[in-house]
Length: 174
Image (cartoon, rainbow, N blue to C red; front, side):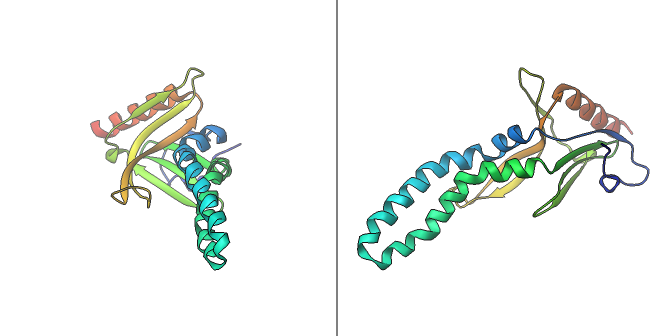
């Protein structure tokens, strides 16, 4: 298996590339929405059932049932998405590439990396967070919150963190 050549520019040197464990990726990305989805969906079912005695009012519960169901199924969405994620670290930037439905590519120049946060598990896998993004949510009281992102669910995470740290330091020294 080789890296997709569109992930890096001409003249860039690929220092590392890899794929996340889809189960770990899904857990890290979806645990919060899944847990909130349990009471949300439960209440939507209860409300829709109670409103069904009134006839037409049960239809108002359908959007809430669908939202709650989406929250409960979010781990499956993120699992499938995790199978299509590729991470790359070059001498110039860190890349998070998500293929498939709703593709996106996040490219963070190493000079813009403000922090490196390592979260290692006992088995040597884990996460390396190096960027913060403003995320919007209807569940947040303020409507948005800062969410950390990076290389999530990668094996040999300490090596990846070391490579990222050295690349960032080399970029600052240059």
